[in-house]
Length: 355
Image (cartoon, rainbow, N blue to C red):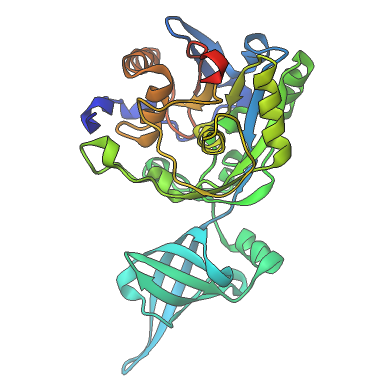
Protein backbone atom coordinates (compact mmCIF):
# COMPACT_ATOMS: atom_id res chain seq x y z
CA UNK A 1 0.00 0.00 0.00
CA UNK A 2 1.70 3.15 -1.24
CA UNK A 3 1.40 6.76 -0.15
CA UNK A 4 0.58 7.75 -3.71
CA UNK A 5 -2.62 5.68 -3.46
CA UNK A 6 -4.01 8.43 -1.22
CA UNK A 7 -3.11 11.44 -3.33
CA UNK A 8 -5.53 13.68 -5.20
CA UNK A 9 -5.57 17.17 -6.72
CA UNK A 10 -7.53 19.76 -4.76
CA UNK A 11 -8.18 23.28 -6.12
CA UNK A 12 -7.03 25.86 -3.57
CA UNK A 13 -10.38 27.62 -3.94
CA UNK A 14 -12.03 24.69 -2.13
CA UNK A 15 -9.96 25.16 1.05
CA UNK A 16 -12.34 26.79 3.54
CA UNK A 17 -10.87 29.65 5.58
CA UNK A 18 -14.10 30.47 7.43
CA UNK A 19 -17.02 28.27 8.49
CA UNK A 20 -20.51 28.78 7.16
CA UNK A 21 -23.20 30.28 9.38
CA UNK A 22 -25.18 28.88 11.01
CA UNK A 23 -22.98 25.91 11.74
CA UNK A 24 -25.56 23.37 10.61
CA UNK A 25 -25.88 25.05 7.20
CA UNK A 26 -22.72 23.28 6.04
CA UNK A 27 -23.18 20.81 3.23
CA UNK A 28 -23.23 17.10 4.02
CA UNK A 29 -22.30 14.44 1.48
CA UNK A 30 -24.03 11.21 2.52
CA UNK A 31 -22.14 8.20 1.15
CA UNK A 32 -23.32 4.62 1.36
CA UNK A 33 -21.65 1.59 -0.22
CA UNK A 34 -23.08 2.58 -3.61
CA UNK A 35 -25.17 5.73 -3.11
CA UNK A 36 -24.32 9.42 -2.85
CA UNK A 37 -26.67 12.19 -1.72
CA UNK A 38 -26.05 15.92 -1.41
CA UNK A 39 -27.62 17.15 1.82
CA UNK A 40 -26.89 19.60 4.64
CA UNK A 41 -25.81 18.99 8.22
CA UNK A 42 -29.21 20.27 9.39
CA UNK A 43 -30.71 17.20 7.69
CA UNK A 44 -29.11 14.81 10.18
CA UNK A 45 -32.35 14.24 12.16
CA UNK A 46 -33.91 12.86 8.96
CA UNK A 47 -30.91 10.63 8.31
CA UNK A 48 -30.60 9.19 11.82
CA UNK A 49 -33.20 7.90 14.23
CA UNK A 50 -34.06 6.03 17.43
CA UNK A 51 -31.43 3.44 18.25
CA UNK A 52 -28.60 5.41 16.69
CA UNK A 53 -25.86 6.81 18.93
CA UNK A 54 -23.52 9.67 18.08
CA UNK A 55 -20.17 9.63 19.87
CA UNK A 56 -18.94 13.17 20.54
CA UNK A 57 -15.44 14.30 21.49
CA UNK A 58 -15.80 16.89 24.28
CA UNK A 59 -12.20 18.08 24.25
CA UNK A 60 -11.68 21.83 24.46
CA UNK A 61 -9.11 23.62 22.30
CA UNK A 62 -6.76 25.83 24.27
CA UNK A 63 -5.40 29.11 22.82
CA UNK A 64 -2.07 27.42 22.24
CA UNK A 65 -0.35 30.02 20.04
CA UNK A 66 1.72 32.57 21.93
CA UNK A 67 3.84 35.51 20.80
CA UNK A 68 6.65 36.48 23.15
CA UNK A 69 10.11 37.96 23.49
CA UNK A 70 13.41 36.62 24.69
CA UNK A 71 15.84 39.12 26.20
CA UNK A 72 19.57 38.46 26.50
CA UNK A 73 22.37 40.61 27.92
CA UNK A 74 25.23 41.23 25.47
CA UNK A 75 28.30 43.41 25.37
CA UNK A 76 26.31 45.90 23.34
CA UNK A 77 23.32 45.93 25.71
CA UNK A 78 20.13 43.91 25.90
CA UNK A 79 19.26 41.96 22.76
CA UNK A 80 15.67 40.88 22.23
CA UNK A 81 14.17 38.40 19.81
CA UNK A 82 10.57 37.74 18.86
CA UNK A 83 9.57 34.18 19.67
CA UNK A 84 6.49 32.33 18.42
CA UNK A 85 5.31 29.36 20.51
CA UNK A 86 2.75 26.68 19.77
CA UNK A 87 2.00 24.47 22.74
CA UNK A 88 1.82 20.78 21.87
CA UNK A 89 1.10 18.79 25.02
CA UNK A 90 1.64 18.95 28.78
CA UNK A 91 4.54 16.99 30.19
CA UNK A 92 5.88 16.52 33.70
CA UNK A 93 5.27 19.00 36.54
CA UNK A 94 2.98 21.28 34.56
CA UNK A 95 5.53 21.99 31.84
CA UNK A 96 4.60 21.97 28.16
CA UNK A 97 6.25 20.60 25.07
CA UNK A 98 6.17 23.25 22.36
CA UNK A 99 7.17 24.16 18.85
CA UNK A 100 9.21 27.36 18.90
CA UNK A 101 10.18 29.68 16.04
CA UNK A 102 13.00 30.52 15.70
CA UNK A 103 14.30 27.78 17.96
CA UNK A 104 17.92 28.71 17.19
CA UNK A 105 17.48 31.97 19.11
CA UNK A 106 16.74 30.16 22.37
CA UNK A 107 19.00 28.53 24.90
CA UNK A 108 18.14 26.30 27.84
CA UNK A 109 17.51 28.34 30.97
CA UNK A 110 16.40 31.46 29.08
CA UNK A 111 13.03 33.10 29.73
CA UNK A 112 10.34 34.00 27.20
CA UNK A 113 7.99 36.80 28.28
CA UNK A 114 4.42 36.87 26.99
CA UNK A 115 1.55 39.31 27.45
CA UNK A 116 -0.16 39.79 30.79
CA UNK A 117 2.77 38.72 32.95
CA UNK A 118 2.89 35.16 31.63
CA UNK A 119 6.41 33.83 31.10
CA UNK A 120 8.19 30.53 30.62
CA UNK A 121 11.69 29.20 31.22
CA UNK A 122 13.18 26.92 28.58
CA UNK A 123 13.73 23.72 30.55
CA UNK A 124 15.29 21.80 27.67
CA UNK A 125 15.59 21.63 23.89
CA UNK A 126 15.60 18.35 22.00
CA UNK A 127 14.47 16.95 18.64
CA UNK A 128 13.42 20.32 17.30
CA UNK A 129 11.14 21.11 20.23
CA UNK A 130 11.35 22.91 23.56
CA UNK A 131 9.98 22.07 26.97
CA UNK A 132 8.70 25.24 28.65
CA UNK A 133 8.07 25.68 32.36
CA UNK A 134 5.56 28.48 32.95
CA UNK A 135 5.40 30.85 35.89
CA UNK A 136 1.75 30.00 36.50
CA UNK A 137 -0.10 26.74 36.99
CA UNK A 138 -3.60 25.42 37.23
CA UNK A 139 -6.45 27.89 36.95
CA UNK A 140 -4.01 30.82 36.97
CA UNK A 141 -2.24 29.37 33.92
CA UNK A 142 -5.54 28.76 32.13
CA UNK A 143 -6.61 32.36 32.72
CA UNK A 144 -3.26 33.78 31.61
CA UNK A 145 -3.23 31.60 28.50
CA UNK A 146 -6.77 32.69 27.61
CA UNK A 147 -5.63 36.31 27.79
CA UNK A 148 -2.31 35.94 25.96
CA UNK A 149 -2.89 33.12 23.48
CA UNK A 150 -4.55 32.73 20.10
CA UNK A 151 -6.37 29.73 18.67
CA UNK A 152 -3.96 27.36 16.90
CA UNK A 153 -5.45 27.33 13.42
CA UNK A 154 -4.33 24.47 11.15
CA UNK A 155 -1.36 25.33 8.95
CA UNK A 156 -3.40 25.19 5.73
CA UNK A 157 -5.68 27.96 7.08
CA UNK A 158 -2.91 29.96 8.74
CA UNK A 159 -1.10 30.00 5.38
CA UNK A 160 -4.06 31.81 3.82
CA UNK A 161 -4.99 34.24 6.61
CA UNK A 162 -4.06 35.20 10.16
CA UNK A 163 -6.06 33.98 13.17
CA UNK A 164 -8.41 36.57 14.65
CA UNK A 165 -10.87 36.98 17.51
CA UNK A 166 -13.67 35.21 15.64
CA UNK A 167 -11.67 31.98 15.62
CA UNK A 168 -12.01 31.75 19.40
CA UNK A 169 -15.68 30.90 18.80
CA UNK A 170 -15.51 29.31 15.36
CA UNK A 171 -12.73 26.82 16.23
CA UNK A 172 -14.47 25.47 19.35
CA UNK A 173 -17.32 22.98 19.54
CA UNK A 174 -20.49 23.94 21.39
CA UNK A 175 -20.04 20.96 23.73
CA UNK A 176 -16.32 21.50 24.45
CA UNK A 177 -15.70 20.80 28.13
CA UNK A 178 -12.25 19.43 28.94
CA UNK A 179 -9.30 21.69 28.02
CA UNK A 180 -6.26 20.10 26.43
CA UNK A 181 -6.52 19.98 22.64
CA UNK A 182 -4.38 22.06 20.30
CA UNK A 183 -6.57 21.23 17.31
CA UNK A 184 -10.34 20.99 17.09
CA UNK A 185 -12.34 17.81 16.41
CA UNK A 186 -13.58 19.58 13.31
CA UNK A 187 -16.58 17.44 12.34
CA UNK A 188 -18.12 18.51 15.64
CA UNK A 189 -17.88 22.19 14.67
CA UNK A 190 -21.04 21.72 12.57
CA UNK A 191 -23.26 21.14 15.60
CA UNK A 192 -25.22 23.86 17.37
CA UNK A 193 -27.78 23.77 20.18
CA UNK A 194 -30.76 23.61 17.82
CA UNK A 195 -29.35 20.65 15.90
CA UNK A 196 -28.51 18.75 19.08
CA UNK A 197 -32.04 19.34 20.36
CA UNK A 198 -33.57 18.17 17.08
CA UNK A 199 -31.48 14.99 17.13
CA UNK A 200 -32.46 14.27 20.73
CA UNK A 201 -36.13 14.81 19.86
CA UNK A 202 -35.69 12.29 17.04
CA UNK A 203 -34.46 9.72 19.56
CA UNK A 204 -30.77 9.83 18.69
CA UNK A 205 -28.59 9.19 21.74
CA UNK A 206 -25.26 10.86 22.57
CA UNK A 207 -22.14 9.61 24.28
CA UNK A 208 -19.26 11.89 25.17
CA UNK A 209 -15.65 10.78 25.15
CA UNK A 210 -12.44 12.81 25.30
CA UNK A 211 -9.45 12.76 22.98
CA UNK A 212 -7.11 15.74 23.27
CA UNK A 213 -6.21 16.32 19.64
CA UNK A 214 -2.51 17.10 19.18
CA UNK A 215 -0.65 19.07 16.53
CA UNK A 216 0.64 15.75 15.24
CA UNK A 217 -2.68 15.34 13.46
CA UNK A 218 -1.26 17.70 10.81
CA UNK A 219 2.07 15.92 10.41
CA UNK A 220 2.62 14.59 6.90
CA UNK A 221 3.21 10.92 6.19
CA UNK A 222 6.82 10.69 5.01
CA UNK A 223 7.13 7.00 4.16
CA UNK A 224 6.05 5.56 0.83
CA UNK A 225 4.95 2.27 2.40
CA UNK A 226 2.15 3.61 4.60
CA UNK A 227 2.07 0.49 6.76
CA UNK A 228 5.42 1.56 8.26
CA UNK A 229 4.15 4.98 9.38
CA UNK A 230 4.15 5.60 13.13
CA UNK A 231 1.31 7.66 14.55
CA UNK A 232 1.72 10.32 17.21
CA UNK A 233 0.15 9.52 20.58
CA UNK A 234 -2.80 11.48 21.96
CA UNK A 235 -4.40 11.28 25.41
CA UNK A 236 -7.97 10.06 25.64
CA UNK A 237 -10.59 8.77 28.02
CA UNK A 238 -13.63 6.55 27.65
CA UNK A 239 -15.43 6.46 30.99
CA UNK A 240 -17.15 3.30 32.25
CA UNK A 241 -20.49 5.01 31.61
CA UNK A 242 -19.54 5.85 28.00
CA UNK A 243 -18.34 2.30 27.36
CA UNK A 244 -21.58 0.88 28.76
CA UNK A 245 -23.71 3.19 26.58
CA UNK A 246 -21.90 2.22 23.38
CA UNK A 247 -22.02 -1.49 24.19
CA UNK A 248 -25.74 -1.26 24.97
CA UNK A 249 -26.41 0.35 21.60
CA UNK A 250 -24.48 -2.38 19.82
CA UNK A 251 -26.30 -5.10 21.76
CA UNK A 252 -29.65 -3.59 20.79
CA UNK A 253 -28.73 -3.50 17.11
CA UNK A 254 -28.33 0.28 16.92
CA UNK A 255 -25.69 2.14 14.98
CA UNK A 256 -22.65 3.66 16.69
CA UNK A 257 -21.54 6.69 14.66
CA UNK A 258 -18.54 8.68 15.89
CA UNK A 259 -18.51 12.37 15.04
CA UNK A 260 -14.97 12.86 13.79
CA UNK A 261 -11.96 10.66 13.30
CA UNK A 262 -10.74 11.47 16.82
CA UNK A 263 -13.81 9.91 18.45
CA UNK A 264 -13.53 6.93 16.10
CA UNK A 265 -9.84 6.34 16.87
CA UNK A 266 -10.55 6.47 20.60
CA UNK A 267 -13.47 4.03 20.71
CA UNK A 268 -11.67 1.60 18.42
CA UNK A 269 -8.63 1.84 20.71
CA UNK A 270 -10.89 0.93 23.61
CA UNK A 271 -12.52 -1.97 21.73
CA UNK A 272 -9.56 -4.25 21.04
CA UNK A 273 -11.38 -7.03 22.88
CA UNK A 274 -14.39 -6.74 20.58
CA UNK A 275 -16.40 -4.51 22.89
CA UNK A 276 -15.65 -1.08 24.31
CA UNK A 277 -13.79 -1.13 27.62
CA UNK A 278 -13.08 1.91 29.82
CA UNK A 279 -9.95 3.65 28.57
CA UNK A 280 -7.66 6.22 30.16
CA UNK A 281 -4.32 7.11 28.61
CA UNK A 282 -2.52 7.62 25.31
CA UNK A 283 -3.43 6.01 22.02
CA UNK A 284 -1.36 5.87 18.85
CA UNK A 285 -3.74 3.68 16.87
CA UNK A 286 -3.18 3.91 13.10
CA UNK A 287 -6.18 2.95 10.98
CA UNK A 288 -5.59 2.20 7.31
CA UNK A 289 -7.20 -0.18 4.78
CA UNK A 290 -7.33 -3.68 6.18
CA UNK A 291 -8.20 -2.50 9.69
CA UNK A 292 -10.91 -4.51 11.44
CA UNK A 293 -13.53 -2.18 12.90
CA UNK A 294 -15.15 -3.54 16.03
CA UNK A 295 -17.73 -0.95 17.07
CA UNK A 296 -17.96 1.72 14.36
CA UNK A 297 -21.01 1.58 12.07
CA UNK A 298 -20.58 4.95 10.38
CA UNK A 299 -18.65 8.19 10.62
CA UNK A 300 -19.36 11.88 10.28
CA UNK A 301 -16.20 13.65 9.21
CA UNK A 302 -14.88 16.55 7.15
CA UNK A 303 -12.89 16.21 3.92
CA UNK A 304 -9.22 15.53 4.54
CA UNK A 305 -5.78 16.35 3.19
CA UNK A 306 -4.23 14.32 0.39
CA UNK A 307 -1.80 11.65 1.62
CA UNK A 308 -3.03 12.09 5.21
CA UNK A 309 -3.61 9.45 7.88
CA UNK A 310 -7.20 10.70 8.09
CA UNK A 311 -7.80 9.93 4.43
CA UNK A 312 -6.34 6.48 5.10
CA UNK A 313 -8.79 6.05 7.98
CA UNK A 314 -11.89 6.84 5.91
CA UNK A 315 -10.55 4.58 3.15
CA UNK A 316 -10.30 1.78 5.70
CA UNK A 317 -13.95 2.34 6.62
CA UNK A 318 -15.41 2.65 3.12
CA UNK A 319 -12.79 1.16 0.81
CA UNK A 320 -10.13 3.04 -1.14
CA UNK A 321 -11.93 2.96 -4.48
CA UNK A 322 -15.16 4.11 -2.85
CA UNK A 323 -13.45 7.06 -1.17
CA UNK A 324 -11.85 8.07 -4.45
CA UNK A 325 -15.34 8.28 -5.94
CA UNK A 326 -16.66 10.19 -2.90
CA UNK A 327 -13.86 12.75 -3.09
CA UNK A 328 -14.17 13.11 -6.86
CA UNK A 329 -17.86 13.92 -6.40
CA UNK A 330 -17.09 16.36 -3.57
CA UNK A 331 -14.52 18.24 -5.67
CA UNK A 332 -16.71 18.33 -8.77
CA UNK A 333 -19.65 19.58 -6.67
CA UNK A 334 -17.67 22.33 -4.95
CA UNK A 335 -17.68 21.00 -1.40
CA UNK A 336 -15.45 23.00 0.95
CA UNK A 337 -12.49 21.08 2.38
CA UNK A 338 -10.59 20.75 5.67
CA UNK A 339 -11.25 22.09 9.17
CA UNK A 340 -13.72 24.87 8.36
CA UNK A 341 -15.19 23.02 5.42
CA UNK A 342 -18.20 20.81 4.73
CA UNK A 343 -18.86 17.33 6.08
CA UNK A 344 -19.56 13.80 4.98
CA UNK A 345 -21.63 11.06 6.55
CA UNK A 346 -20.00 7.75 5.69
CA UNK A 347 -22.22 4.69 6.06
CA UNK A 348 -20.52 1.44 5.06
CA UNK A 349 -22.34 -1.86 4.77
CA UNK A 350 -23.23 -3.08 8.25
CA UNK A 351 -20.79 -5.53 9.75
CA UNK A 352 -22.37 -8.52 11.42
CA UNK A 353 -22.12 -8.23 15.18
CA UNK A 354 -20.21 -4.99 14.83
CA UNK A 355 -17.18 -6.67 13.28
